[in-house]
Length: 267
Image 1 (cartoon, rainbow, N blue to C red):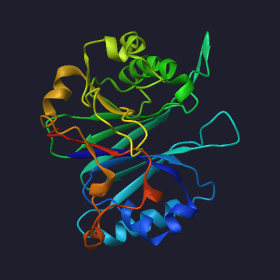
Image 2: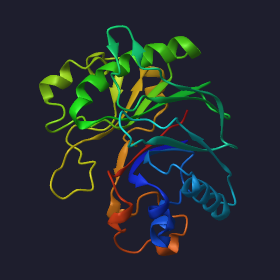
Image 3: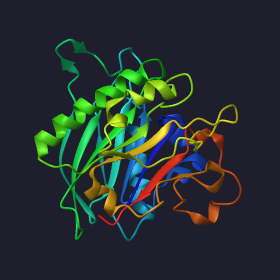
Image 4: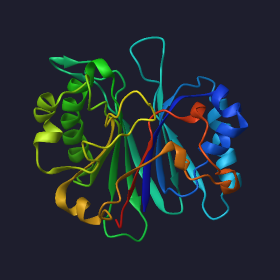
């Protein structure tokens, strides 16, 4: 099973109406993919994207899930999750409620958690927690993810939890010293699969490791293909085009945010 996450930078009508960008964003090799920073209030770009995705994929059909519109200001975003419904079943989803006593509004964008059951696999289930942390609060948000983990583990009675997305876990947002105090980092049951020295951004001005994949427990770790958690460079075509004839040279920066992060699993 192949799982990926990508921040498209303001996924909406303008971006999807660009033919080159649309073809770039077509997903054809992933069983589950998380797309961050969806901003289209009308939903028109989302419908167009899903229709085009299923039009060019004849072997698999994709289903789509959207979070609530999230954010503290008028600017709102959604998490979008696509999965091959002939490969995995979506059993349940949960919009995390950020209302704990003494720690209200820890997240600018509360996690949207999904509970899957893959077909014909070793693991009986898999929980995904997509993340898009804010630069100014990323340390607090990443630490709060431990509470999210505890909640979903209790809710669905499983340890098979994967946290993935844009953690902002580098540079001025989170220092090495601060990282050591983040619970999902200090607890050795959590395995961070993207190394700290990997550049996950498409920017030429820094080489930060913003994007991460974290899995809980040795059972889930054992199902991942060794060294398969990787960053797919933008110049190598993010999302491995469905229209592979278009995959020549570098891809338009209009489609890029951070680079694509990918993990292969035998789960």
